[in-house]
Amino acid sequence: MTRDTIMIRYDSRGLVPAVVQDDATGQVLMVAWMNEEALQCTAATGEAHFWSRSRRELWHKGATSGNTMVVRDILVDCDADTLLVKVDPEGPACHTGERSCFFRLWQSGSDADGYRAKVQTCGSARLTAQAPGEASIVRELYDVILERRERRPRGSYTAELLSAGEDKILKKVGEEAMEVVLAAKGEGNDRLVSEIADLAYHLLVLLAARQLDPANIEAELAKRRR
Image (cartoon, rainbow, N blue to C red):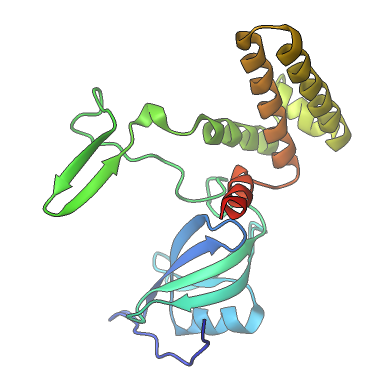
């Protein structure tokens, strides 16, 4: 990949869209806007700066929340009118507390009740859609764990586990791993599946405690497959 001096093609407002991507996992975190000042401030500080269209002012990502983004690279597309900003995020990218702003699954409003996975043909283009109920349960569960980590509601086992600290979490991971082994050796498949689910949950809690994401595991597995 070459590093060249490129003339950015800003729009009539002096802005260019910036797609922000986690450098480690490849996950798209957010889409924002940059003007020339934001781009220069990003280059000068090494942290992401954007232009807020609603407030009409320069925006240092994380200046208030602490969820800053260390910029590793800025790539320019072939038309020089879109940026890909590769970052190391220091916390959630979304103002809702989600790791990525893209956490909701689209569904058609006209057939929401009977929606099923299907392929639609529009001219020569093919669009594959996923039914709402088929969203990753792992992601859904992890998002709940993150919510418990932030709010720490009373009576929540997850919140209690996170508050107890990493040693307690590791102890539970070890116990659940042993339960998986015992179920595999002497019990039926239903019991084995149940114990694996328990282990998976506690592993997700460990990821949350370490400020990691299931996408990190996916990226590692994809790298190994390649």
